Length: 77
Length: 311
Image (cartoon, rainbow over all chains, first blue to last red; front, side, top):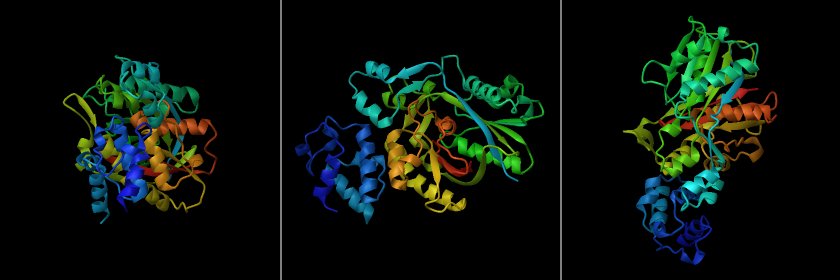
């Protein structure tokens, strides 16, 4: 797992936000396009790509894309 | 002894809430994008004075009208799945027994489950039949969730519909033999989908994660318990929660789209989605004779159940 790949997969869930806005340090809940639906899309993406199912609160507790990546790495241990 | 589904009918209230209605009510909302994801086009909304029993009675009347060999007199047990009963007491099934003219010698009871409820009802009906307690069980579902949801709760209003279903489960041969079941319950997550203190609440993320965790292993177990080898023709009628969730489940379970029934356009009618989708799939010729149909319900409780119907 690497953060660059994770950030790209994270960004692929969005249609309106410019891809250059997605960086490991991006505070994703501040994105205009972020919604409750994005949260569900992220659970699906992580489940499909990383074979681990995260609860909603894992995503809600993460500030940045890096935080979420770290949480997924932790769960995969 | 076996139990069979002889016929299914359903009723959806006339009053509808369209995507255009929703977009007009919530202009700041990216409505089109959201509707494309959830897959709902119209939501059926019960009238202010229309109760769960009103809808279940209509579904049952349609069942009797469409199947002359099925009569109210032949029913000897009524099971009614609802989380929106007409009254806290008495049991709504008792009111339904009287309104349908079902004999006083019949049994009748409500049971309180949501999205998993129809599958649990099949198990209860089968149990009554194979134990010799009943011969013809009228299995009804009916929910008016839209009455629980706050007018400004656009996320839940976008998904849920009201509706009712009626199925006749009998000892005689019918259209589909009811196979073996798998059940599951996790009450520690009750708070993820709850109506409490006048507030309807769903933690969409947690419910979605629960579904991805619980349903694929349950379906594998259902297939094994019913002796369905991988590659054998079968199709899947899951609780029609929302399109995005079903697509994620389908991909996770590696099921081809043509074997996976999607019937979401009229919204999530809770315990009625499976019988509605099954009835539509049968009428549309999507279920060949001899097919094994995996049915699976999952949600509020948290509660889940699956079984195979042999058509």
